[in-house]
Image (tube, each protein chain N blue to C red):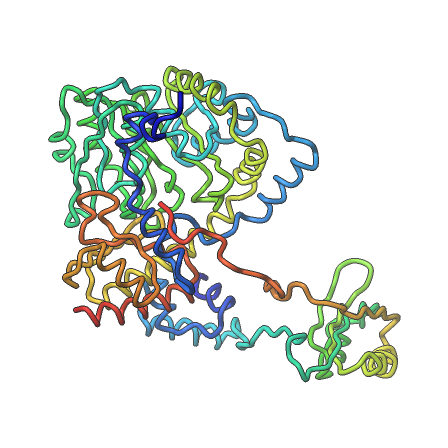
Amino acid sequence: MELIELLEKNGRMEIETIATMLAMNKAEVEQSISKLEKVKAILGYSAIIDWSKVLDYEGVTAMIDVKVTPTRGVGFDKIAERIYRFPEVKAVYLMSGAYDLSVSIEGKTMSEISRFVSEKLSTLDSVISTTTHFIMKKYKHDGVIFEHEDDDRRIVVSP
Amino acid sequence: MSIKEQASYLSETVKQLRPSGIRRFFDLASKMENVISLGVGEPDFVTPWNVIEASYHSLEQGYTAYTANAGMIELRNQISHYLQATYHVDYHPEDEIILTVGASQAIDLALRAIINPGEEVIVVEPTFVSYAPVVSLTGGIPVAVQTDAKDEFKLQAEQLEHAITEKTKAIILCNPNNPTGTVLQKEELVQIAQVVQKHDLIVLSDEIYAELTYDEAYTSLAAIEGMKERTILISGFSKAFAMTGWRLGYVAGPDEFIQAMLKIHQYTVMSAPTMAQHAALEALTNGRQSVVNMKKSYRQRRNYVVHAFKEMGLACHLPGGAFYVFPSISETGLTAEEFAEQLLQQEKVAVVPGNVFGESGKGHIRVSYAASLEQLEEAMKRMKRFVDGVK
């Protein structure tokens, strides 16, 4: 468990460092990691990027609330799949509450996303309605605070 | 009549008091830039957000007045529950607990309440730097007992026995220890308790780091049979909850002791800061998970740092608590002062030379691992380069 927590915070941490910190040996750590990868508990390793700091990048993200009619036998899974297979869709969650699916989508421009919603998403048979929210600023993503000043405010030497 | 040289007005006791050896290192290090400091005696975490937020809320609600001298009764109730649940010691919230301005004030109160001029107080070295000076301020005489690196700086019953005279009134025990990180286990405490009882002494048990123990279940000295009636238990929120700047500690003990301390407390500080008390109430009620998380992280970093010192070829025991390691640097042929000063000048890494914590700290350095892993990695790399250079 501690191993997963360390990797979740820093996927690039050296095996040797992990082993020392958890008082395990290198081989044990390697084994545990490949086991986790095999059972797909660890699905991949990625960087957390503040795209607003990447100069050439132009892009927008939207969260879309989608109401759908579930299909007999497969419930929401079938329609969710129809949606998540589009590569521009970054996340799909089944939600409790006012709508059914929460779809997160990334595109180059607002009109690109609007086109996706009107042409691809709303035209699906089981989709009843969509509400699109564009993200204006990211303050925190995946537990990481953007624009966070983490200067050490302690005095340099103290008893 | 014109004023004489100001120094001549000072009290003799204060004139005798030497400034802490840590001060010199602070002055050196704070003049330099880009120093990685492992000389800090406090958590690298900021206080958990729910705790800060609770204090905001209390201010918004207008809780800006004094509290009862001993502190808010709700908070004393919580501390009483906490001490019972965590360490199995019973203290009555009404008359056996006082909220203080940091554990530091609790030490001052306890010593002032029990020490008559000329009475001796045993201080176990290497020691936190405040005990002996505060003993001197009360007119008492601090008597140092040295512990050995070979015992991982654990106080041995015979070492204690040896230091006791007919003037001995009390002993100050810091467990887990600052600066060595050593934790005395139950059976070791029992041995010490026997000597204490035999000579009818009082113990000031500074357990501020009790939450931060990593290997074995922690035992409070007050939980040892026959000790509660002669123990003044000192703790606080600074270390476990990352709340050093809030200045909130507490003292728990037998009614008679606590009531005596309360007299001093009411005349000298009135009550501990109100906003900090509201924060502490939240910390005890909803802050346990934060402590668990921080503790996990300290333990991982401790393992990393102890391993790094072994790789450097410096002897370093695996300390069971606090956030310090206390490696020996005698292999390098340098004194602790020389080591710390050269390391700072050459590699810009600040550590504290062990001799400032007493005679038995000579040849050692105190390294705090309350720093980010990235900082620790870089510091250990630099320190290794330094050690390889001088060896």
